[in-house]
Image (cartoon, rainbow, N blue to C red; front, side):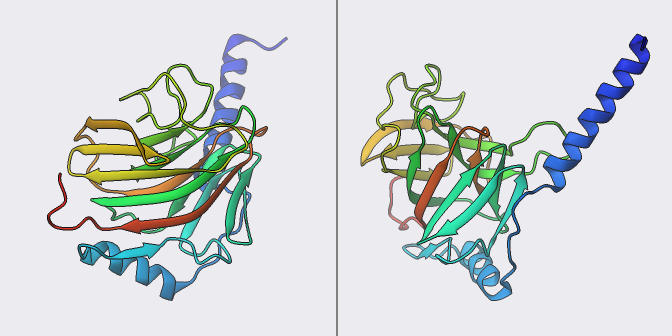
Length: 225
């Protein structure tokens, strides 16, 4: 019979192994395209008011990097994840003030989110980044779709499982403004995270999530903060 010390040692090794998989993951190969990566990095660096850029090239996952166990694919301009657990992050980690718009579709009882001003969690069992998260979950009573996860929550979901909906995230200084299908869901003030990458979440194996038309814009200079 194993004693308590042996059990704890095995559990610790298993946890460390999982952390390595999640940190070094992933089940998805993400190709490198230096020209496209440089274009995104230059866009973030210049932050020219009114400029915009599509963050996917519509063909593959160039410009992004996968973490964890999720299986990410691209077909007909739609980015999909199955078999959760993990996230797909922009290789550029220098996004600060921006307006991010995208269409999302989640499977029945699915769960996902859009992280922004985010950072890698480091060597930890945490499978997702650290940063702000615009929630995608039509069944979580504490954080329905459009919530700023665990920071500013809504009790009713503005979206439905299996249907495309449009999300817009406006991060301008400390103001965090999330809209779904053109309707303001959250308009909050939270200054904690200033800069980082953008990431799409894969939450659990039974869930499939689709994303399309992921476009980032720099706010006009006279836009309200």
